[in-house]
Image 1 (spheres, rainbow, N blue to C red):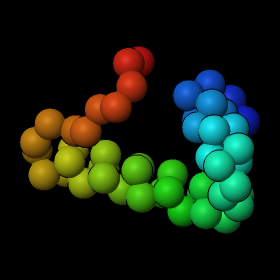
Image 2: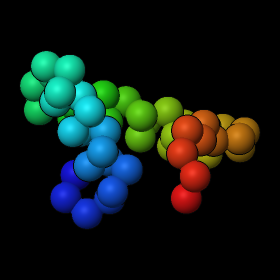
Image 3: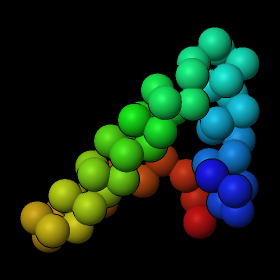
Length: 51
């Protein structure tokens, strides 16, 4: 949350919506879990942003 610009933008956007840091971190963990699960299954990973 400190160095990755896309994550920083996400945190800023969610904070503006009134979410707490705890809720934001939970959502980020779920996103990472979906990415890793897709890779482990051998299928295409879910991509929502350009690298």
